[in-house]
Image 1 (spheres, rainbow, N blue to C red):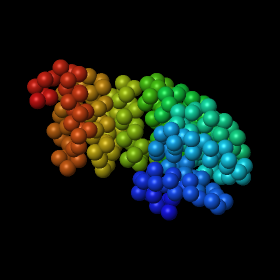
Image 2 (spheres, rainbow, N blue to C red):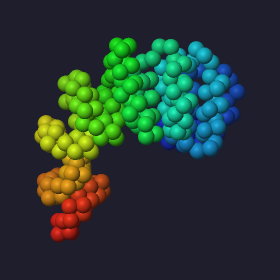
Image 3 (cartoon, helix red, strand yellow):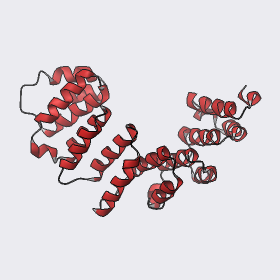
Image 4 (cartoon, rainbow, N blue to C red):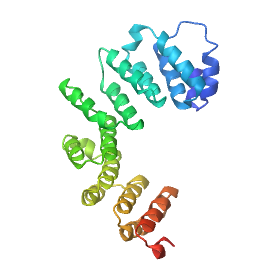
Length: 248
């Protein structure tokens, strides 16, 4: 029932029901409640989540799924130090554990730490999957450092680079790092462009003072793919470039 409430985004009711449980908890319950607390991120959720984590049996701490949820929860609370302690206490870490920590660093403005964690993954022969690679691309976007971007991209397997979610993230990354040609190269490689693909490229043009190109791409964008974000991106691009006529 708790899982059902969480699945339907009824997080307060999930915690209400959880507090009535008077039986020994299993690992799945910890995961579900941590997820509910992470979504709510209010005082009550923080109190329940941290208390539950403190009471979690040692053997569950080495359950990668429960531990991933716990780290994600702590990072959503902004408690980076506790998340790091939790991470270090886990004996056998899977890629998802590393991903939760790196994603938390991105959320808390400490993206530079992601690169150190990535090196640790390499040392331990832990292979990132699509999720971890996209988190690292996000860290590159926030760092704005081209050498980080190219270093990470050079190591992403081609089968993952060819996935649209990764391609969209790369367009965003190159645009934010000022490498508009590389953003365009990725955009041109996308076979089945979606709303996010176009928005990322329009935004990339805008960030690099190319308002005319942003407006042109917006006009080329299929009507059924346009959303409010598309409009915001193109208006910002035109505004930054001083193209009042295009904005109208």
